Image 1 (cartoon, helix red, strand yellow):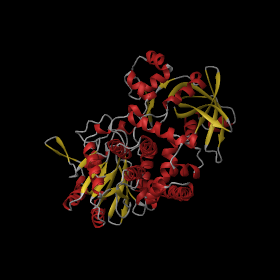
Image 2 (cartoon, rainbow, N blue to C red):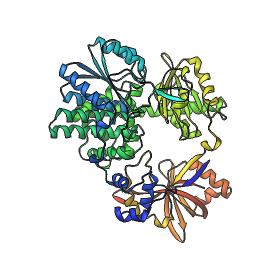
Image 3 (cartoon, one colour):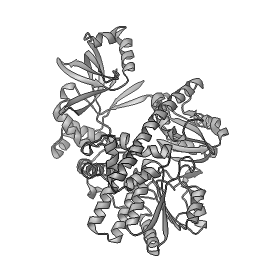
Image 4 (tube, rainbow, N blue to C red):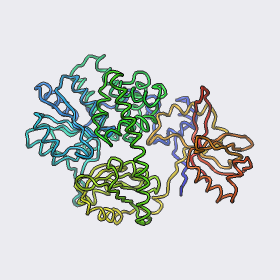
Length: 588
């Protein structure tokens, strides 16, 4: 079930078109990305490093830099403690290599997903103290670790938190009060008092900003500084895409600049991952970061220890990097197979437990590898269109991950029943948790009792940028749309729509006939449309709408079925030939 919406945001599209040498169609698409002024259009299209925000604008950033500088001067042993996902691994690498280049005595610990769980715990504090560490710098975690940081402070340790997750809070008399950990500095753009202009950055970007400030304060040689920042911006770009950050404002610049450097001079670890996955550096896109490179880096932290991914990023030559990259790819292939098994189990659980009426799905798979919970939760959300949690049985109780829908703030919903958790954190669209096994049914009940989502909140919303006949879907526009890249969250590929498209004939493509090409006609002109979606659902729709035998007739060249469709427009290169490609997304 879908509801189509045409964006109706207004601006002087003709003026934008003339000033920026783009068509009114492209101008309208840019406005649909919540771009309001000509200055914002300029930044969206042509933003560079010069348009990024100074690190000092982030609350506590200068304090954090000053503390670390002092610890380096004193020769204190510093430990970076990160996280086991792409963002945490990237942030750990940026901070560790950055501090080491400034002469710091620094090492890195990334928690083991199963043994340690997410973020700081008491054991990590104890181990750091026993190892003679007197300064801990967190990255991509720490904002919710108040008890653990209090323990470190009691041991006379200095803690600097760098994070980007939501700040824990308590509500009293209708007002919300933040709960900040007692660290010497807490750098998190999500803090209420932080006036950083763009708060939706990932942990690796916060780490990048801190290192950038440290380099500047240290008066590092320009060439050395730029070489390191060129490497770190690559990692920040990967993390931004993989942590599903909005590709707008500063994030857009980070990913664009990161991709430029990945095309020309990728750092050794990422270059090795491209090699084992058969990706030419010059053709790398944000898609590859999110769906090829990122999952390989993530796989090691899911099935083993993220230390191996960190070793890959630290590699300085191909001989050491390629074997590690090969291991990560193999591990990701194993992860894919395990995910499919877990997904099938989750679907069976939903059906067997008659959860059709639940507004929030809570699926308990005790034997599922806990590292796959988030991926499976995302797939369940896609299938049922509902906020979804997948819980697994860990060594100490139940652990789980959730993935949300646009109209449901997952972290706030969990905060309303926080007494059920031993640990939890996250943001609007995703969250993680730990709890006692006996609380699983209570968790499902609490979420659904307190859920105020209405029926319309579950209807999939299709946001159309521009209604546009196929006659306008030409090569010139397809090439111009490339100025909108990189595409991703909050800046999706433009979506067009048109009515009265007659499907004349079709041909299944791919090894297993998993996608199809169709000859269609509109206003007396013929076009080719490709569809990569679920063919079985499309076929069922045709049979229901046009009667039994419609599918057979279409593939025999006896179609003539008129539909309304949404589509994306792009350029496709195959066997040295590049041509316009119209890709159908939805139909009715």
